[in-house]
Amino acid sequence: MTNKTLFEPYVLGSLTLSNRIVMAPLTRNRARAGFVPGNFAAEYYAQRASAGLIISEATQISQQGQGYQNTPGIYTQEQIDGWRKVTGAVHAKGGRIFLQLWHVGRVSHVDLQPNGQAPVAPSAIRAETKTFVHNAFVDVSEPRALELNEIPGIIEDFRRAAANAIAAGFDGVEVHGANGYLLDQFAKDGANTRTDAYGGSIENRARLTLEVTAAVIEEIGAERTGVRISPVSPANGVSATDPQGQFNYIVEKLNELGIVYLHVVEGATGGLRDVAPFDYEALRRRFGNTYMANNGYDLELATTRLEQGLADLFAFGKPFIANPDLIDRLKTGAPLASLDPATLYGGGPAGYTDYPGMVAPVEP
Image 1 (cartoon, rainbow, N blue to C red):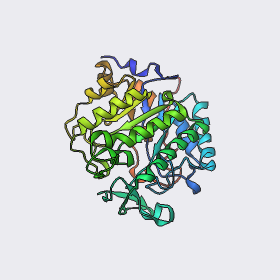
Image 2 (cartoon, rainbow, N blue to C red):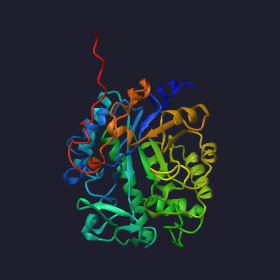
Image 3 (cartoon, rainbow, N blue to C red):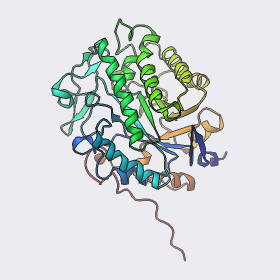
Image 4 (spheres, rainbow, N blue to C red):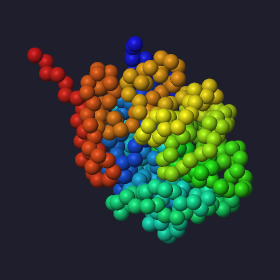
């Protein structure tokens, strides 16, 4: 078995990636005042630019879309300017980077919302999860159901955020439709009990994801648009009675829209791959462009799945935190460093930009 094909260039739309390994989105809670990327963000991402593609940390499309403290936004000029420093640093190292567009929906707290309002959701059902606010993990707040006439405004927020991302120098965007956040809440009937055009049937519950994606495509083009889904992940308290039927349909429609890649969390986000029965090959068959696989991948599993033709790109998450030179380590079989969990969320450069690369051997 050979792993060399993981490290060969891959054509993604109009881009040529240096390899098939993707840096997954990783929330680090280090934005500064105004929800602008932190002072060390450009260095952090540039250190990891050897990834074939970087997908940025989840970035809220509006203040309403925020669910955790110190996460960055993409809805003000200051935020655009801050992200431009990041994209410039990554491109200077030869890297490629997409921005993940995020609306958390009900996974938020009143202290993060405009004027202390309740978070919004498809239905007024409180999520069984916690959020990070005031430097502590606390229960999320009770949400309110979105009015039908509010939904076009959220779609417009996604559209505007996509345009802002391109203005900030990103190569494209990823619509975050996974992990129990707003679009996933609409898609899954455990969180969506609406009886209007956005609830009830599989088609209606998929509507918001598809309308958001279509708006983003209209703004920046399908070749710059990816979508992330997590069909069976219970993250943030979501559940679905028929995930296979729901996501087969969503993927068929995303394929018709022509998005450049489909990013699939296989199993429970950051957890077990076999948390629930699901046929991911059925999604692969329904999608004609790039299939990106995520969750628990290492070099061996990625190599096997690539050789089997089950995925094109492979997203690695936490290994990139402590291993800025992850690609070189995987190529050479060098051991991977372990991350410090105490510095994952919030803080400064410690546990962010100070993880060392491999020490080059000294010539005799």
